[in-house]
Image (tube, rainbow, N blue to C red; front, side, top):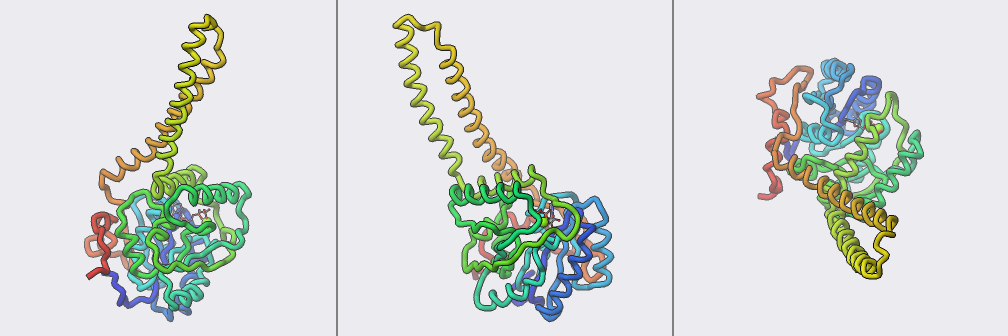
Amino acid sequence: MSSIDSPLRVSIVAPCYNEEDVIEEFARRALATGRVVAAGSFELVLVDDGSRDATWSKIEHMSRENPEIVGVRLMRNHGHELASTAGIASSRGARVLLIDADLQDPPELLGDMMAIMDRGADVVYGQRGARKGESWMKLTTSAIFYRLLRWLASVDIPSDTGDFRLMTRRVAELLLSMPERDRFLRGMISWIGGRQVPIIYERDQRHAGTTKYSYSKLLRLALDAITGFSARPLRIASWAGVVTAFIALCLLGYTFYSFEAGWAVTGWSSTMVAITVFSAVQLITLGILGEYIGRLVQQSKGRPLYMVDRVVRDGEEVPLVDCPEMRSGNEHQFRSRDPFLP
Ligand code: UDP
Ligand code: MG
């Protein structure tokens, strides 16, 4: 399916988790944009990431009135990155716009993004000029994170970008062919390369509702980004081992010397310092190893990335056997070659 000669010019893909307060307004603005910018040749793929509120019933209801809406409901909450992946896998347009459903990213920017892509870009990514309504805590942690990631990672991941971006079908398919479970989409898209062009925009406040990203989810995303794009922490851990081993050797010499000199009973403080420092280094090193090994174990199970519960297209529920969304990410996991190569 989904080829470059798709009948649809663009798919707008939005993951939604407990977004009952904004989903209708979002759909209204996205549909209005699609009708103007893509002259109606578009689809709006709304992925319900296992919401517990009225999000899915609202999607179903809207899809009956607007045949452009494709609704995909996941069987449980899989998180932003996997919900977005499910949406991209269900999309058919020649281009894919990935956008949050909370209206922080204006769907109206699609027109400008399409124009930039017409001039030959593979990816047009939104870069935040101003960010309204974000706490200084979030701004500071995110600034530190991006600096840390830039230092650690081997790919250049532009700062102040979210997942808001327009990509070609080819980039979307390459992204889907990447089998990792722990997905840091903006990093993976950067990794693909090609012509990636920023578009500066002002990020609005959330239209309604509250953030669905707790600090623990953010931390997990940060760790996914670091482990997914860099082996440097492992190297730092080895260096920490080398340095502490050297200190330990000096301490050993000092210990023997003290024993010979007869002041062996004193030295409680140095013993405590040695124990705490060395155990801390060991635990940190084990922790770093654990972050990588845990992900390796999960990945090696080869489970589907996500599971689809229901799909509505053209206002009607599609039997899952007939529909490509049933792929549940499994098929993609082993399709590692570039689908556009002959
Ligand atoms: N989201 C999701 N699954 C989750 C968490 C978030 O699909 O487990 C969606 C959410 O509905 C929104 C987007 O991901 O469309 C970004 O989430 P949010 O706006 O809460 O994050 P923030 O902008 O505060 O970082
Ligand atoms: Mg948001």
